[in-house]
Length: 265
Image 1 (cartoon, rainbow, N blue to C red):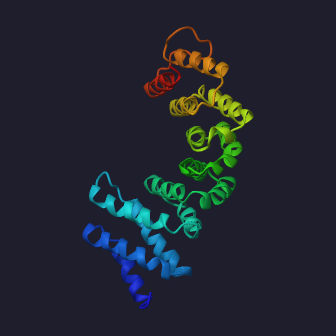
Image 2: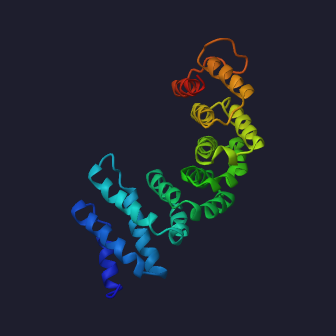
């Protein structure tokens, strides 16, 4: 920027307001200015845009368009912004995590390796859950390379990590072309999710059934696996006689079981 640092400071201040009339043009101005910044100035500008993701859009829906614009601006930055976004994970809240994961997912391939590193280096369940959730936002087929680590997280002691892992397996089933998933990979995914559908926390069971349904829709199960899954799903719904699953008391689990069963039919 030609008048930095004062012009940059002023623009960053505008990004901290809660007035949409100021916020929206400020985001658009930052869109054109980001390419002129580097180093610490670039980082501060990105962090200022990320601050929009902390807004509670349920209480302030008028701020959502600005947050969405900031998302588009950051996606356009590609690989350059990935490390800064991952650093933003520290101390952030769940609302901002959804936005950060969405941006990383839309960046795609350039975010994959660093997300895998983030997952491997995560020292707490919260960070690991975020890395898994963000991996699930990737639609690039290369996300298949993260599959072994994701499956390993299905036996993690933390329920939130298991929940994110169960969701991400289904996302991988959607993102990767069937021909790039070997029979061994498919079997590992199926077996891991089926085991996970027995977990004592209902959200994990529900996500496991949801991802199994996605595997069905993607044509990733053979006849034997499909028959076994149908038997388990009917057991969770209280239909028929299943030794592996009895009627599940959790509505969210039964809802996902019913949806997965529709995929089989």
